[in-house]
Amino acid sequence: MRVHFWGVRGSLPAPQLPSQFRSKVSAILERLTADDIKTPENRERFLATLPPWLFGTVGGNTPCVTVSCDSTRDMIVFDAGSGLREFGVAALKEKPKRDHFHIFFSHFHWDHLQGLPFFNPAYDPSVTVDFYSPMKNLETALHGQMTSPYFPVHMESMGSKKTFHQLADPLPLGDLMITHKKMNHPGDSYSYKITEGERSFIFATDTELSANDFLKTDENTTFFNEADCIVLDSQYTLGEAIEKYNWGHSAFSLAVDFVANWGIKQLILFHHDPTYDDRKLYNILQSARWYMERMNIKGVEILLAMEGMEIQL
Ligand SMILES: [Zn+2]
Ligand SMILES: [Zn+2]
Image (tube, rainbow, N blue to C red; front, side):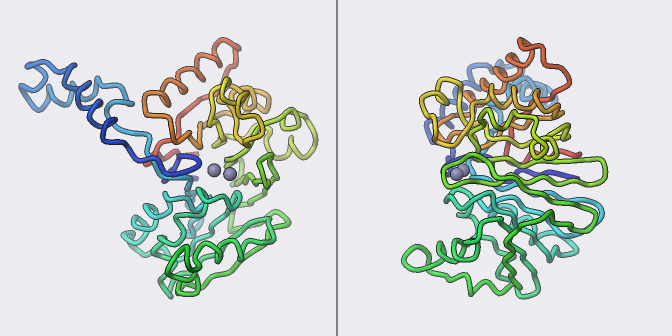
């Protein structure tokens, strides 16, 4: 399985502000010496010394994560945030053409839908798009955002072969098995788990972890126990999570406790707050790793979800 991140931001898109860009350039120039630009090799060496929050960005698009695997050309997509537009552009360039997409929705808040009208492959009559959600209003929710006065193009204008599936049972797709689980979020949200042989991946955005999620019930154990990787809502610092109780998102430290509780091997911090700049997000990553060490949690790798990042499972 290959997991690719196209949008990692929560709540609404958060492009880099001109002031943030200027302060990055300024901070880079402060570090620069005449020696650093003497040769192309020196320049590359200098760039390699810059911290990732300065040389790069976490990205501003809202949630969209794709999963591909060797056993099929079909592409699995989790959520249709603004990152879906970028994925659509990349998919159209692929050769041979990718012509079957399975799009799973965690829920229908705007940040998880807003990329769909801009997903170019969905307008191609030779393409098949299957939409999935355990929620019964899947089709009306997707049509609803492509209706006047909100958007000038109706979903019927998407020429692809579209099918809407209300999920109830585990879904086999080729060699993959996809299961879902209801999570704690205003209006509910759903997590998805893909299992391929011995490997498993969980997409769990927009969830406010609670004591129930830590209980060793059969349902929790089957879904979470010893998964290889989880993309997990970790929008807040602990202080904010207390302030924003019942807003439907989790603190990064609770996300660390959660993966330790379930023996999950890799934690990818996700659904970044739109008000956090790159430096703050890297501070959160450092804090999460520091917290893991302090709690003496072993065998867990913690990463920050970034646009363009790809992991292999
Ligand atoms: Zn969200
Ligand atoms: Zn939400």
